Length: 410
Image (cartoon, rainbow, N blue to C red; front, top):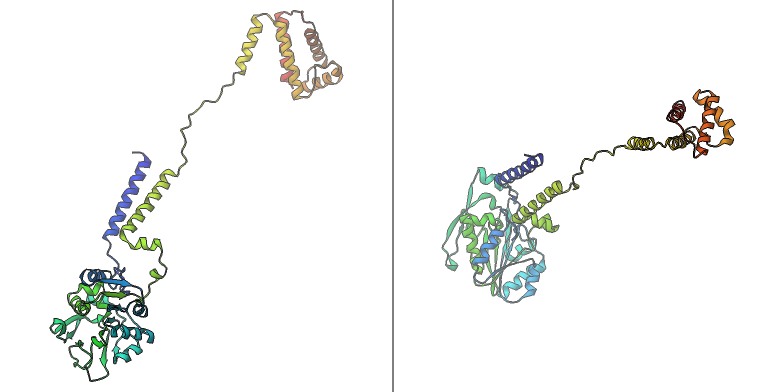
């Protein structure tokens, strides 16, 4: 198998092992309450809202409008559900709640607290031990439950005791008055009297009702999967079964993901889109690895051009020799001889007017007798000038050898 194939196989095996490993890893849950309809974590409300959407007979919707805005939007009776961690309601929002209740709406506030102004209007006083806890470790190692009782028999429900994990009950409230004529459905701690500690109560107000419950963690994904929790939550919600229910998230904790939401964050938060994004990134990486190389055809190995100059010289020499053009061959050699001297030592032996300078210089450079050089140069000039003169084979060889000897000694 070629090396690049081994590389591809190793990449594929690595990715498969990576996917299998991620699928086998335990899921990390966030136990921070958000009460958001898009949050699938234990204390989100994705499953809770999905269940209510399919069970509420008059319809169920989720909005971001505040209580003040909901009071201005419509005067028709509705069920208004607010699930939040802490609600510090201002007077304008409290007045909006009472205004909707007077017109026949049922406003249900589910939170650890609703603010002093609302508590004073309802005549209740909150108490408890905060809402900081580690539910994950509590459920894993302790699993201790606390009980409270549904004591009202209205709406067709019989009194019943509910068992809830202790960290889910972090706030309770009691009534500042002994008169409970306007409190029709209290849910009390099992050791409390009917006129004191409670976790939920419904107050009649005009044509409608106001319900307050201090157990918001029961109205989440985690709370709805526990049988006792789900039964208690659905009992409270059936108080609004004859009305279209609107849940507002305006008072839910605002997470950093929602503050800085982006398409990439949303894609990563959705498993199908997240895996599609991972696949796209891996595909792009493989494309860069295998297609990023510069592509070109294979360059064939070419032999270096051979120097045929020597063969050409032999061919020309043989041609002159066999045609008995001995003079022409010597003249051709003289031309090359004069050019070689002019190029290498800058002496022009073809110019007779410079003989007094060129010939002594040439003799000095070659260490050949000056008279011998002078005789050779004069004979060659005469041979070049006399076009019809013929020379013997011996003379031709002598002239050529003498010129080669001078060139060799330069």
